[in-house]
Length: 175
Ligand SMILES: O=P(O)(O)OC[C@H]1O[C@H](OP(=O)(O)OP(=O)(O)O)[C@H](O)[C@@H]1O
Ligand code: HPA
Image (cartoon, rainbow, N blue to C red):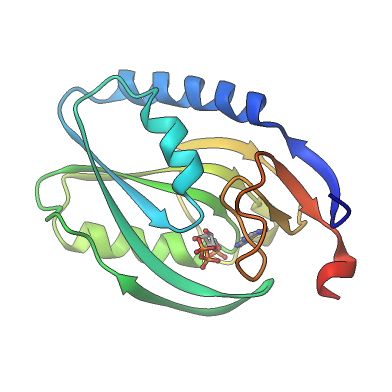
């Protein structure tokens, strides 16, 4: 696709990473785990990851928003809340990407305040150079440079989520 400057991670590589992460997660917990996907970007990654978690799990979703195009407003809004109560549960938040960290630092606090027994993060990607606030992510797939990426759930103005790989979006699309 001409809007994609280069492919960073193919479907095969992402699936292999899900296998590794799922194995670690399965070893780290013993009881039931509440896996919380953050809509919409986390959906393809979460679908792959949960197949590799060998534990009794419950899945739920939250929808928050802060991005328009390639820029964050800095303000996180909850658009859809959880169905389940998190009190006393081990919670694993699943994300596609940690960029400034604002979304996940906000969500982690919200879930901790509601009385979860533990809250950990599993993110497919992280962009450490862009971090504005500290986020403690225990499970991370890949560390990437400061480039706007799309595919495997990630969008630019709602497009490209269905690409079966993670690629760098050409600057000509948004500059
Ligand atoms: O670390 P941050 O700078 O907060 O950025 C990361 C967040 O941005 C994206 O979500 P977005 O709000 O674009 O929603 P989407 O998942 O529906 O694309 C992504 O899925 C993360 O939730
Ligand atoms: O690089 C990105 N791509 C898509 N969505 C995002 N949200 C934060 N950073 C990104």
